[in-house]
Image (cartoon, rainbow, N blue to C red; front, side):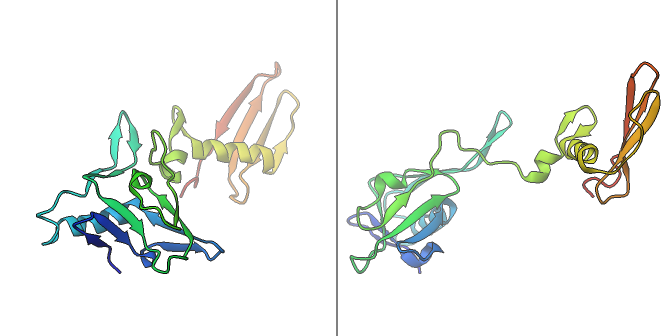
Length: 201
């Protein structure tokens, strides 16, 4: 069900059916992504009726600045307001807006529908887990490898002796690979070698 707009009053109505039910409650907890709001408003603004009227919004796309990716922003402008559908006048539900910063709470028509904004100064887009795990934390050593090596020494099978001089090693859990091998001389000096075979594959 599409959004509707009253061009005289500049009130845009968001149907309840366009929000996602997260918890049946009561009260019902629903969510709505900023990008979904932008998509619908863009369709209205570029429609035959919308073109002659004032612009509805300004959208600032997701952008990267100094290596940090900032979330998209949506600003409702020119006196437009947003009303979440409460056709019965008694239908109280809560909508959480996700996925970006916005001023929807500033332009929301007051009714029984409550709003959770999730705005945050400096809201950024987090890197995916793989990007974090594959980041080098030392030269030639990724976080993913470091975790595997630490886990091997903490929970893997060990062999050899801890006495000096000697040799001992730790196997990767479930991998069958000797992840960490150590050689200790008579003075207790230890030299480690690591085997990252299969990590992350």
